[in-house]
Image (cartoon, rainbow, N blue to C red; front, side, top):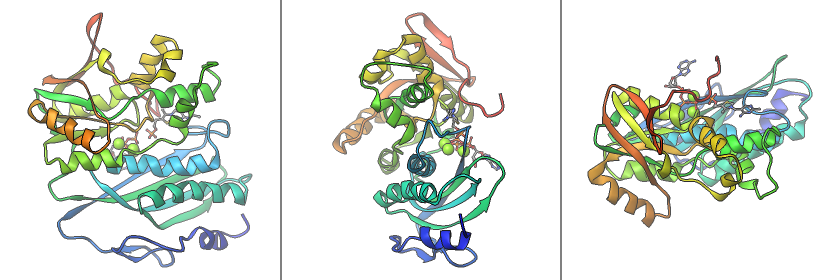
Amino acid sequence: MKDEFEFINRIKPNKTHQPTLIEGIGDDAALIRPESGYDDILCVDTMVENIHFNRKTMTPYQIGYKALAVNMSDIAAMGGQPKFYLVSIAIPNGWTETELDDIYRGMSELAESYEMDLIGGDTVSTSGPLTISVTAHGRVKQDRKLLRRNAKPGDVLFLTGPVGLSAAGLSILLEEAHSDKPIEELTKAHQLPTPQVKAGLLLSESGYRIALNDVSDGLASEAHEIAEASQVHIVIAEDKLPTIEALSFFDKKNVLDWMLNGGEDFQLIGTVSAEHWISLSNLFEKNGQTIHQIGTVSEGPSKVSLNSKNGLMPIDKKGYNHFT
Ligand SMILES: Nc1ncnc2c1ncn2[C@@H]1O[C@H](COP(=O)(O)OP(=O)(O)OP(=O)(O)O)[C@@H](O)[C@H]1O
Ligand SMILES: Cc1ncc(C[n+]2csc(CCOP(=O)(O)O)c2C)c(N)n1
Ligand SMILES: [Mg+2]
Ligand SMILES: [Mg+2]
Ligand SMILES: [Mg+2]
C-alpha cells in the first residue's frame, strides 16, 4: 500500500443508510444518535491469518465477508438488528491493493444486504500475519434481549439449522477430507457463512423468554455456555440434529465430531419453554425460516449430555480453544 490516507478514501462508502448516523468516516470518531426504546448492542471479533484463515482456505473477498458475518452473528445471538460496523486492519507486506479492496468488497456487499454502514476503523502495518478486527453495532428493543442465562428446566433446546458443515468444509479445503461427490455446500459454509439475523429477530419479536447463543466454537461448547450461565442440564438428542446430504458422504464418527465440536457454523442454539415451542416453530415456518428441536433442558448441575443409541453420555466443552 502506497498511503493509508488514500486507502481510507477508497474504502469510504459513498452512501450510507442509517438515519441515526451523525458522523461517519472522516473525523476523530463516529457519532451515532441513540434511539429511544432500544438498547445498543456492541461486539468485536477478530480474524487472524493462519488461525482463522489462510491463503488456501479463503479468498480476500471471503475473509472480509466472514469477518463481518461473525460479528453480525453475535448481534443476531442477542436478538438484535445490525446497524453499524468499524474495521481495524493490520496489514503485512505482500498483500496487494486489489486484495485489500477485495476484503472490503466482501464486507460491503454483505453489509449492503442488511443496510449496515461502515462508520470507522483503523489501518496499520504489521510484521505479523494479516489481522482484521470488526466491531459491530446493533440495536434490540428494550427488554427483548436473548441472554445465555435465560434457560430453565423444562425448556425445549432448538437449533436454527445444520451444524458441522463449516468444519467439514475446512477439512476439505485443508485436504484432510476428500469426496468425489458435490461438496460445494460445505466449503461455502466455511467461507461465506450466513449470519442468522432474521432468525434472531424473529426470536426477539416472538416475545417469549429465550436463551440464545451463536455457534462459533462448536455446538457442545455453546450448549455448555448456556448450561453454565443458566445453571441447567442440557440434553442434546443425536438423532434430532439436522443434517444435509453432503455430510452423508463422510465417515459418521467424523461427522458427529464436526457437528459437536467443529464450530464456525453461526447457526443459533437456544431454549424456549415447552409451552411456547409450537407457536415459535409456526412463526418460523410462516416467515420462511427453519428451526429444529434438538433436545431438552432439565435441572442442573450445569452440564451437557448427548442422548444417542448408546444412552445418555456427558459431553465436554471440546470446541475450538485458542490456547489448548
Ligand atoms: N479481551 C477481552 N477483553 C474484554 N472482554 C472480552 C475479551 N475477550 C472476550 N471478552 C468478552 O467475553 C464475552 C465472551 O466472549 P467470546 O468471544 O467468547 O464470545 P463470542 O464472540 O460469542 O465467541 P467467539 O469469539 O467464539 O465468536 C463477551 O462478552 C466478550 O465481549
Ligand atoms: C486455517 C484454519 N485453521 C483452523 C480453523 C478453525 N478455527 C479457527 S478459529 C475457530 C473458532 C472460532 O474462533 P473464535 O473463537 O476466535 O471466534 C475455528 C473452528 C480455521 N478457521 N482456519
Ligand atoms: Mg468473540
Ligand atoms: Mg457469540
Ligand atoms: Mg463471536
